[in-house]
Length: 368
Ligand SMILES: Cc1cc2nc3c(=O)[nH]c(=O)nc-3n(C[C@H](O)[C@H](O)[C@H](O)COP(=O)(O)O)c2cc1C
Image 1 (spheres, rainbow, N blue to C red):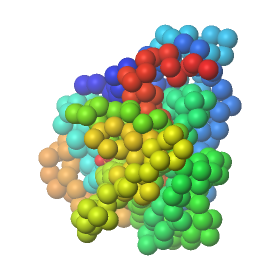
Image 2: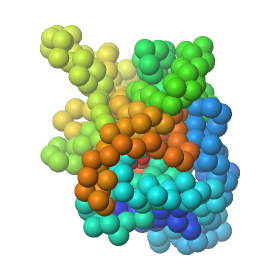
Image 3: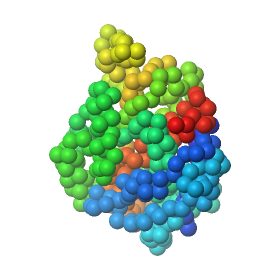
């Protein structure tokens, strides 16, 4: 019953949606990493709900770091971040113990924890917990940024609407990552973003929800990071990405498009760019043999439609053990994709910090 990710740099999550607080403990971080409180707050702000496209639950997301930081830098001992819960309405969950929300974790949590789980608002399975992940990820993202490694995610597809490509060259992708870093609705093409938001609003008005596809890119990652078996870079990143609630698919580079490609089309031809080995295309998403090849890492994640919808659904009363119908109460995101995007950045950054520490040693990330 573990809630910990990572080998050299690990992150442990705790808390429940309607409990007193949520938080994260990051262990194995190098001493001397600068902690930029404003930067962490800015990343938390990107995860906050807003407008008709999000839940109406409002949280300040004020955080405190109660250990592992002194004089504005990490000490090398566990960093514990705590975010108080303030906006919970537990009364929304009165009388909802029995019916399991289809698509949510109510039933599986009941099976695993024998009914002892705090089910209010999804408890430990709530998207709320991702605030702690974002705070932890912001520390990792900031540290990676200091080493010239940039992570960024955009909403690449939603309801038949596609965003522009994130870019082909390292320079173009880095520029797009920079532009995306400030955007609440993370798209490269704002007109496509407006259409996507309008569609989410329409879907929400009908009491339904919608999913989509995120694309995350990493630039500046040196070649040689990752293990050939089991702890492949794809494997570790996918592990991290699948930890985000609501993610149901992960693909690297061309991913499932390879089904229609020939080797002559899919192979990424190598060439020398000065003294650096590069590839002309990046169908392999920057990874060969489980190890980074120095090209940008490109990974897409499929985000499912939010399970809690305001329509009558067939389900089972898990306490009574009988069929029933059920209509969700409470406040829910009609789409989670625009909020999940910074969570994707965060888990990718944490996973990379772990893999880089395994490759170069713990202290590398803080070295000037
Ligand atoms: C940022 C974020 C917000 C979420 N908000 C909601 C929500 O309001 N209502 C809901 O039913 N699910 C929400 N989810 C998704 C559920 O947490 C998730 O679907 C559930 O835990 C079941 O896990 P699974 O979808 O990975 O199987 C959210 C997820 C994220 C990442």
